[in-house]
Image (cartoon, rainbow, N blue to C red; front, top):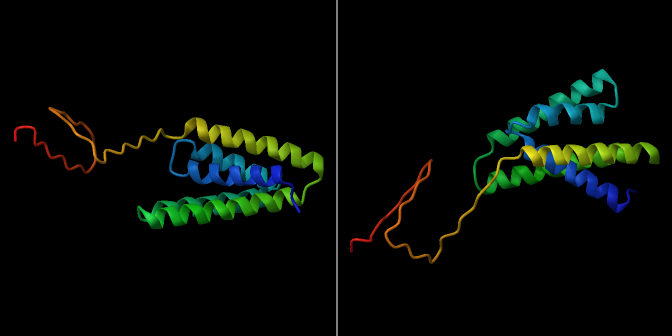
Length: 145
């Protein structure tokens, strides 16, 4: 059984993998995870690269909203489980090394993550406002009424 610190490291690693999918950080994270889990075995690394590519494809195929959230949660859980299994099979000294590698991977993903801004304008009042943005947007300006 894993101690809480190892479980937390595996959870953070799983989250970083999913967070990086579809971003500029993906190629670096993808390679680092394959090397980490493959432990120097070319065949295992290749299998992990393929598994990571499937993860990215599943995440990209998910529709927005609840489905996307559900798929992300499932993928984080799957990668957390893979990382926990890896950690369970290692001697204590190697566990510490892998945890350090996971922490670096999480930091790399966080540093390259796109910045997300969420604005909640419920019950807001705008007077003589201008709105700029991109994507699909509906703006009703009633300041002349």
